[in-house]
Image (cartoon, rainbow, N blue to C red; front, side, top):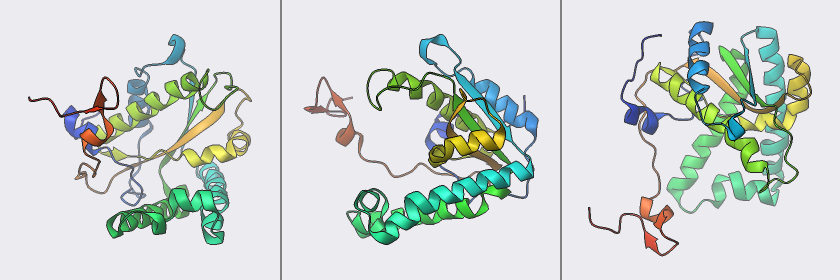
Length: 236
């Protein structure tokens, strides 16, 4: 196995960030390292004990440019144009102006700039990993089989990202590319039953000094035995 840069599991769990601006576009990523991390991700929990995931790693420059073009279309259609026109749902979800305080507004503005940076440079990322599912499409977006549909592929994705982080690489869940799933299938020549769920750009990071992110106090989001007793209320 390749040498690990970070061996402490708690550090890996608390510092695996969504990496965009700090990707090193000029440092090659060996296929062996990607495959090693994918093998580790195969140990993730899966629904019905079926490996319904399919993975396509892309390092061909022509294919990367085509995927980058699709991703740019998604940005314009789902972020840039709706925000510019003041479309209510997108503004509520993404606009910095509706965040609660100046600090939150500044943080959201940084996130949008980072996303746009990735949009503009996606074709330069050394490896683009497309995660697909072969599970039957759920009939409803929530409930029923929907939990199992997404409940296998995202544990796989997170395990892959953790393995990358431990080896000095970074990534981000670029789920927006699923808006162009049929286009991705066409670009990569995928069978109809291989439905793209998310894209993970993969690159070495410039430095490995990522820190834990600001998060809500656990007592605000976690409770015991219902919504009344907040976590942390019991004495240690």
